[in-house]
Length: 106
Image (cartoon, rainbow, N blue to C red):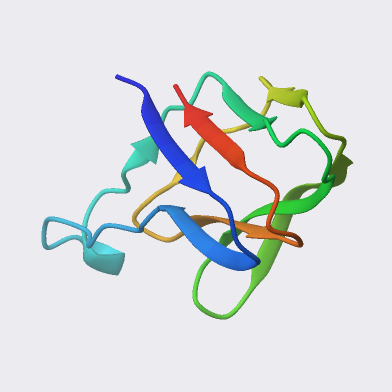
């Protein structure tokens, strides 16, 4: 099932929040792999570009997946190396302008 998020402000947005681990094993149980096949980030603003930073964060450390400029009316498609342990990490995006973007995660 796809997840859709609209953003139109300078902000940090949590796209996928980490989930508590279930179980009594070492480290709190088994990890929760988050299987993502594709992320599209569409800038559907007619005139404003947007600089985005897509990253995972464990509460202390940040690991950047991509940081790029998306021109007006352009879509960025990411399809490689997108899975992460959602028991440890949040998936977040920072945006630099009020350009209207839509993030779709499949």
